[in-house]
Amino acid sequence: MSGKLKGQEAYQRNYMLRRKKIQVTRILLFVVFLMIWQSASDLGWIDSFIFSSPTELVGTFFDMYHHHDLMRHIGVTLLETLASFALVGVVTVLVSVLLWSFPAVSEILEPCLVILNALPKSALAPLLIVWLGANQRTIILAGMSVAVFGSIMNLSQGFGEVSKDKMKLIYTLGGNRRQVLTKVVLPASVPYLISILKVDIGLCLVGVVIGEFIGAREGLGYLIIYSSQVFKLSWLLLSIVLLCIMAMVLYQLICLVQKRKK
Amino acid sequence: MQPLLEVEDVSFSYHSMSGETPVLSHVSFKIEEGEFVAVVGPSGCGKSTILNLISGLIKPESGEIRLNQQQVEQGALQVGYMLQKDHLFEWRTIYENVILGLEIQKKLTPRRLERVKEMLVQYGLSAFEKARPSQLSGGMRQRAALIRTLALDPSLLLLDEPFSALDYQTRLSVADDIGKILKKEKKTALLVTHDISEAISMADRVYVLSRRPTSVRSAIDIQLDIPDRTPLAARNAPGFKYYFNLIWKELCDERET
Image (cartoon, rainbow over all chains, first blue to last red; front, side, top):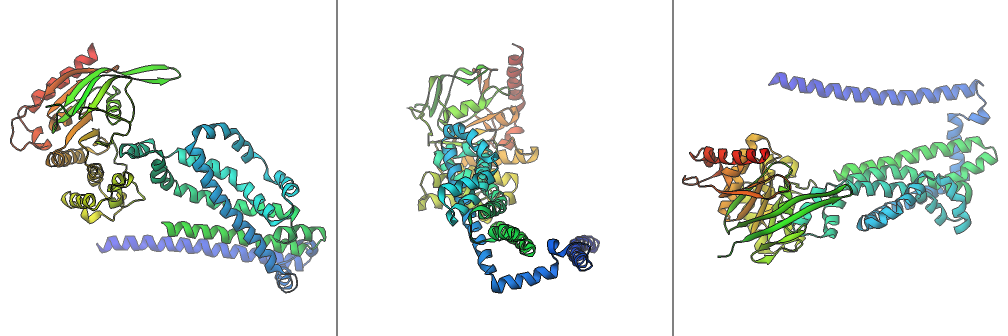
């Protein structure tokens, strides 16, 4: 008994140790990267005007925070991303349900979906701006356009993979096709939907930034284009770093929702 | 008295682009109220097709199926159907799973729910009402699936190899369980199986099917003269072996002709 317990304890200790090592190594790697960057710039190995440096970025952050409305730019991009993400979720479920309900329509439209999904969405953004004007609605739409077609395809495929026997069960219990949808297809596809949404949050951010590149006066995408045109490369790098952080935080949020669901 | 179920001269084919596959050809048989009937046949002979027809999921191309003298229609509600797997939904608790049929037919009346509670207690699942299907053993899952079917109080129960997904030992005890439950609830049942022993141990009458296109080859009344016949006890009855050889021979002859 005690031997067994010891084995279990040892296993747990080993596991935790390994986790810790990985965490520490990650942080160490990050610190070393920052140090090399900093010293390379201080010692003149790289041109600090083009490559900036960690300390300069921190300075830039506070400068922009106080004098250039940085929080507004972050907030705008964040809101546009969340809005397009929410809309993608709703549209994906609605359209997938419609396609499932009308298999003939789904078959007819399949090539359209495949083409729209494969199309580089950055090609659509200029068109959207001409059609709908340079406003937030257009940017949210640009964000959606990157994610929505692939999501519909994936969720529809998920619907299609629900076992035929489970659907048959509903019919044997006297149910109709609508009940097959609500009692089996939808609940069985929840894990699918969540993993689709995990990818979507990043894709929406991509689409929003593309939209901001060409049709915005605010947001991180606008900052990137503006700073590259006036050659404020520390602004540009800071915007990229902020986008990295935003992508990470948004992704972790979805993971948190997924865990709570379980 | 009129039989509960009459299958009369039923034929059915499956269609695909590569051609027509005749599955059933002039199948006829009857089931009286309270009987337990088994259907055995070579694999792929369309046993499940017969059940799908009786439950009204598909329509015969010719012939008639009557339940209580009424022609079976799409989604016939008097028929309970147990599939090969239990198909309990992991996103529902056991209780939510067993009331699924009632929920679908909007029959969540206090009287029926009371009945479900009773069955859960009687068949040893009341402690697991809030459990998820994955926490139950194969036998318990199959019992839960049976309660889900019985909750709708069907006048005829169709069993489509309901034990085939279980390991042998569980299979024997679950078959025994379910046999006892059905007898206690006085249900009329039609079991489809390829397992000859299972058919003899549970059924009052066994229909042997021919190869595709399938028709009924013979009907064998099982009379095991033992008191308190249960599926497990039946396997030890003196007459068991005789029936086994009889059906075995029927199936072998079928293969040779």
